[in-house]
Length: 280
Image (cartoon, rainbow, N blue to C red; front, side):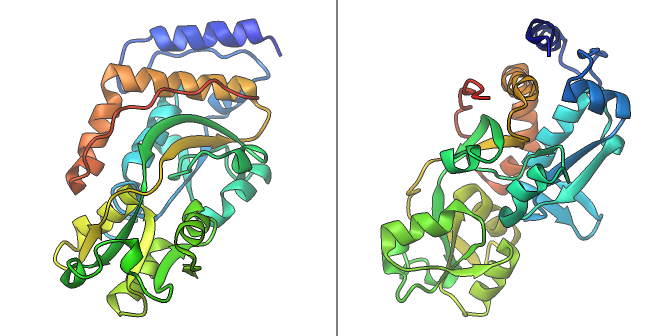
């Protein structure tokens, strides 16, 4: 693969004016970008159970949220419209599997970057930073004021998330495990557990949906940086994705996507993180 040609294509991409339909960039033959562009289709793994971040709206049967907007921008930078995206519901537990098996081309799904994951797949970014927190029933927010107030491990998290190991390490108990966060929230509302733990940005999405029933308590007790997952070893794709993230952080589209999604859920906009060099 001609890395100089790839680099020139990325430079051309970054020079394009900000708009909904970028000018056509003909990527070098043999690259994943060229294949996706000329196939007219991209499969993107996203969450379906994280309001304002990655959510399949039952009223419209459409995916929505900040991650979905970013995924749509990535496709646009390949010259593909939203209609040319196949969104694939990708739970925390299967994100690596779907990339390794070729079931999706990229993953934009609250995918915290870690060395363990980067041993299996590639991760470009970060494009967002958050931290783990605790969700409780609103009526008990003055009693359960933080993780140390949860007794007997009555907290729920999701299989495949980094939140489980971090909670176990910090607080000495093992959370109950569910397939998705909606199931955890249902257990909280039916009093099967006393808390749900994951990234604060995810929890605040549920608070926005049920503000009289739910509350986030306590400070963040981790730093989680979200990246875009891709098949390991594809350096050209990583350079492209990193270029897109850098571009949207500066041309206003990151701000627009945030305002229209997480901003509507009263999430405070964090500083835009600096994109890390590609490791592949």
